[in-house]
Image 1 (cartoon, rainbow, N blue to C red):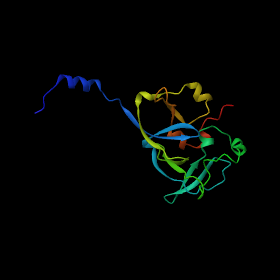
Image 2 (cartoon, helix red, strand yellow; image 1 turned 90 degrees about the horizontal axis):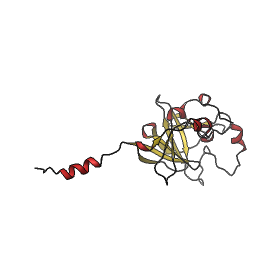
Image 3 (cartoon, rainbow, N blue to C red; image 1 turned 180 degrees about the horizontal axis):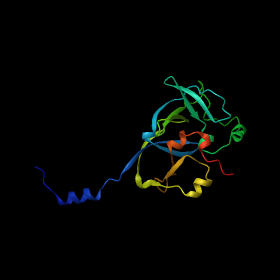
Length: 186
């Protein structure tokens, strides 16, 4: 038979657990990003990618014997125009280059929208699973949404004063057609 202790009852009341969300966290171009775990279908090694890199900003790879669109991160998330992409120095590696035997292993984060459409997001390092308290989520300002250089973002995650913030990507905005996104503000 357990003995009731008022002291232990007070301690447990003081330690109420804060609600958390599980996120997949990764880096793109030296910025931290996150996606809700429910939006990530799988992470796989990136194989060959097909299609012209210029134009629409999407290419194809095969995943489970079906075509999978692979996004151009520069165009989709960082608001870079196609002409700027073509002017990028050859020494700077594109997220869409196929891997070779001498290249560093690349990963493909398969993202699924609420309508069950999927796309691949190329990564140069494996993502991590992280629990984040709900108090760390803050909405983005209207000014940043209008003038900022990063799009498809629904919130900012601030984990502490010494840690850089993470941008919470909206999987539905990532998967929707490119022309449906707002144009870059110049």
